[in-house]
Length: 115
Image (cartoon, rainbow, N blue to C red; front, top):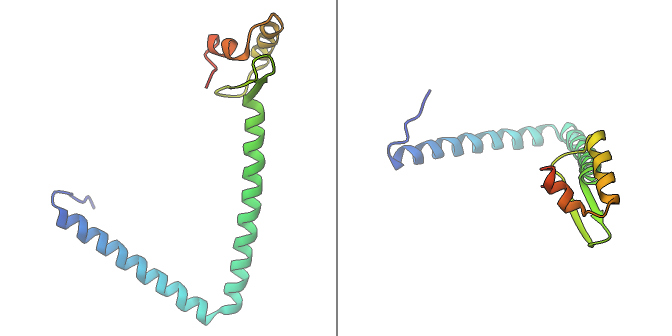
């Protein structure tokens, strides 16, 4: 069902309809929690456990991505961030050029890898 958004009244009616449905669903959830307190406590505990585990896994993933794409240049005291993880041949070229005295920022900029 395609909705035409010609008039502000249509948008307001659609928003009221969605809000009423969400309120009804929230009421159903509260009623179920009151009728099944043991199951609700178990589900709540499980949800918190899963959320904590997911947050920990996401944190580890984010740290590994940062380590793969962040290069610190002690000569200039700056960090250079790449768009993605480097391939082996790129890493070899970067090491060669860095040992010749170039900075990470100029190398990544020449290779179009600078974020």
